[in-house]
Image 1 (cartoon, rainbow, N blue to C red):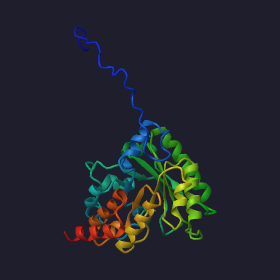
Image 2 (image 1 turned 30 degrees about the vertical axis):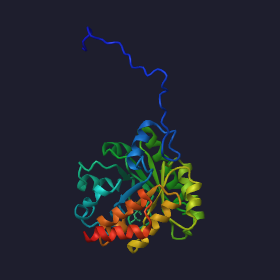
Image 3 (image 1 turned 135 degrees about the vertical axis):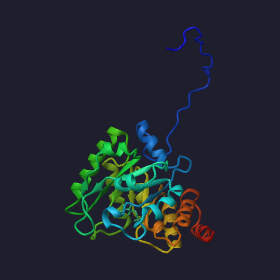
Image 4 (image 1 turned 180 degrees about the horizontal axis):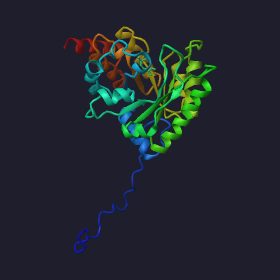
Length: 291
Ligand code: R5P
């Protein structure tokens, strides 16, 4: 029990000074609860409003594809340069050091591989995501796919219910079916559908007219990098996305398949957080690579 004989009366009431009411830096997130906002501000840097997510969840679909054969050797050294790690629970538990102190966006869907049909399961128990101290969960949505659309939208909807229960933001990951045009109209629709169903973040792909995709999506958008490009082109992609209003990248192959992954993730970081021009970022990449 605390001492009762020296209870001092409070005197620093700051009378005349209004209590500050903080706004929230992230698009469409101002009405969320404290835990959601806390997790989102681990993923997105509150100073820049942006994030560099390092995606290395490819193995759950593709197996040991190039660059993720040995995550301990290829990915772990990059962690210090990432703002957020996107991976599966298996890799997180088996290979990612618990001392990394980085937020994790946990892949929630599983169940199929590239050898069969597109994935439509969400099997992650949100309790396991909390157990793993995840800062968000990622759920794939296949807009326009006649067999998958309804089920994957329902998956997202249910994941958002779970997320609200536990204070876990949900990232809607827009998968592009083979028959879909990769244009601003399609990505704008897919992103908007994710947000309307409750996604707190949308991951999609950059395309011409991307500013319209961003404008009509009420929550932050991050772009996937897609297949490996020459470094300068990948930096241009990131630059164009950021200039069009994207809140960051969720990049995998263009980092871990680069000739110098550590240099590349730092160059991408300069584009995302400092608005560095692609040519300057490419020069930075070369300097870091040769160091
Ligand atoms: C794809 O299903 C995975 O979610 C990847 O995390 C995502 O595509 C980003 O990786 P990449 O930049 O290699 O496309």
